[in-house]
Length: 129
Ligand SMILES: [Zn+2]
Image (tube, rainbow, N blue to C red):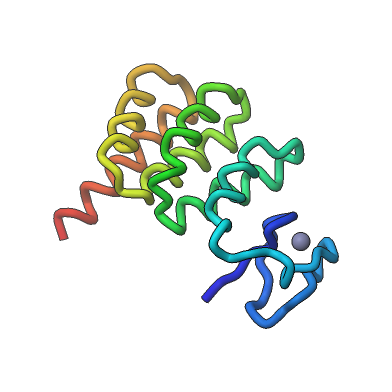
């Protein structure tokens, strides 16, 4: 199982009690609040921390994160972050998230539009198997 530091969101080992990257005392954090903390991290001022939170929320298929992710997508001009959000939304498997990706294909331009298309296509190929 993969663990992430609740402060800097870098990948750490489950047995670590101190984060090797930022020195945070991991043992002090309750695991039950993990999802809530990740969602809060979407408002982090450090871009890398936001990217990681988006990625982890996707991997955890966080349904609670769908609305905050959509909101963040609308607020940001960062293409890399937008693509990360689309991937995370897709991973949640929530119909509402998928509808949003379809909407992005219609409303966005350039690489974001292209990635949204690719994500939707990739998904339908998986379903056909
Ligand atoms: Zn850390």
